[in-house]
Amino acid sequence: MKPDWRALPSGGRRALAAGAVAGLGGAIAIAVMEWFAHAAGYPLAVIPFVTSIVLVVGSPEAEPAQPRALIGGHLVSALAGFAVLWLTGPQAWAAAAAVGIAILAMVLTATFHPPAGISPLLIVSGNLPWSFLLAPVLAGALLLAAFAYAWHRWVSRRPWPR
Image (cartoon, rainbow, N blue to C red; front, side):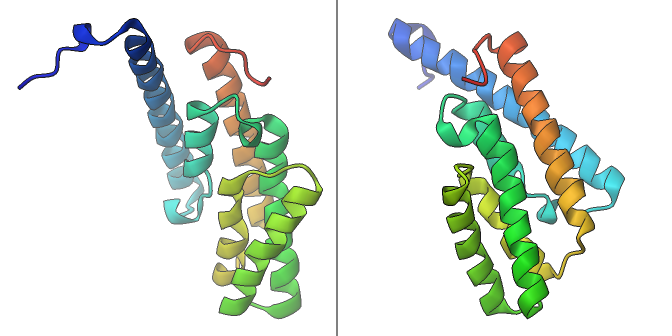
């Protein structure tokens, strides 16, 4: 049996349309991210932004989706990862500790962005260089914020940031 989208109540049709717009935005942002990852020579697995894209495009009103949390959370988490890596080296237990420290640091700095929790894990377990902080972390967070601003203002016609 084929679904009849016209039979949805008006609120359901609005939700469907909003979900379709958010899905399109997420797909476009991820495609651009994949292109940059390929151009920069980084494997996509070490680019920490897929879940950030989902959050910022799908729930733009949420506090963790705001620019302070998006950009600050990624920077604070990466810095926590580098601090732990510098102190301990690339140990499995240290990667776990770095994630815990990153959570604490994001809470203390009011930059809580759950998707950023992957950065310290990647940094410590992959023994990544400090240049990872600038690209892809800082550059990616800034580009994602710019994309979210443009997408929400010009395509989904929703105010972002709050």
